[in-house]
Image 1 (cartoon, rainbow, N blue to C red):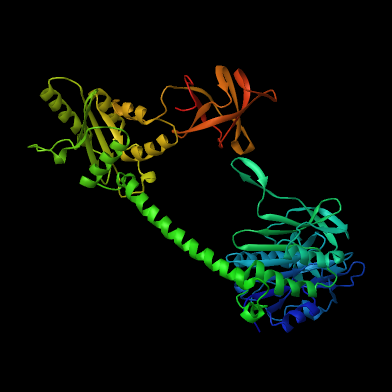
Image 2: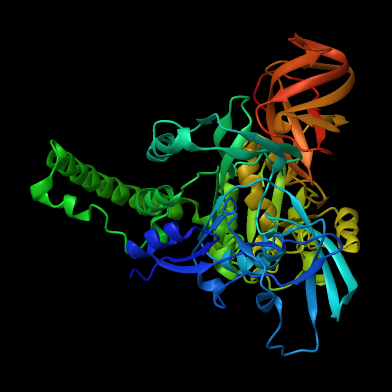
Length: 576
């Protein structure tokens, strides 16, 4: 017997279970219970117990096969429905009262199976279900009291209670079926049995939410339909679950055997570690025409792949060296941080950036000096574990006035740059790390505050044409907390409606000129993106240019609700 996979069969026929055993599959012949013919006469009732059979280690099984179409019926025997051993004082039964003559325990057992299925779903598994008509069966739980009974609860359960997903639409019987999936092994397998299928239900295509829009669930795959193009069979695959719901086959033994031997091992190899079907054909003496040549070509491709990977690793290492300063400005302190900030400022286009550690001065005060036509920019750089004290923020003011006195003019600008909470991931830090008082003091003292995390994001804003290097250099001379936002822009509205997953949004404009090919700045959570207008519509008519009205705007990326929309005051070109 093959140890893996462990297979739990529920209500399979004796023939099917026997066929699986003969092929060496490790199965547990369980049951949701067989139908019981109570032969109730008028005014008669029977106390019944669910004759289900689940393994105690159900959580260890990888495959569950359920045949709801098997409605084998047995006669009622009182001894089968009498508690002979009872560990509690509870003496409850399910009551089957005339005119009900058939006790169907499967819905009740299906409800109990839910807990076991949840355990199985914690790892990769396959659930195979052969359908039957979806009906809700009422169960009356009663307390036995001689020839009388006391009703405790009354509940209805479906045969499909255990299903992780069951997009049932309605009951509908039919014999004419069509395979949806074509030209693959699974599709060919279904075609082989298609003429023998019947069905009892049709299903709807479930949907999920994706960016505030309902889409068809990508985990759901219809595999068979009827002549009215209605879904009668499907698969559903998520991270761990592989669910197959098939139509009815009068004899499904060959179908199940072939599925487990040929289809499932290929589709889900990790669940069939011992599958060795046809492995001997891989030996050289059984090679197919051109097979060895193809293997040689594969080897050459692999060697070329290895060469390219090695070359790419060299390029990656060079790229790390070239742009490593971007990581250093948000991780380092001391001289390494100063060197990284200098590297960034030079990339930004500043000239004459001086590391004051290299200068012969008696007292080291500021870390960096930049002198140009605007005057002298002095910069203090700190890497700290927390956030800045007031004295740390304001220290640059003292240095600024000292330098102004030395120069005899007031063209000195002071900038404090901090890599705060540097032991935390930058996105998890307190941003900005300055109090309102610290920001107001900086404004009043005519000095600037800036974080290295802002510089890091500035790099990508420049790459994405949100702001230019020239504009960023000018912004650095502003007072207070510096903000690198697009320059010379005006707000034209807020997005309230979106379509096509956010690629189209509605905006009401008044005396604002918009044209296909222009650029918009989209702001969400104080972050800006530059998007291109690729289409404009007014009253369902496509227009090239518009200045007023409620319009539909299609852009080249997704926009979410409540985003603010800005434009440049002028559009001299398509570049910022």
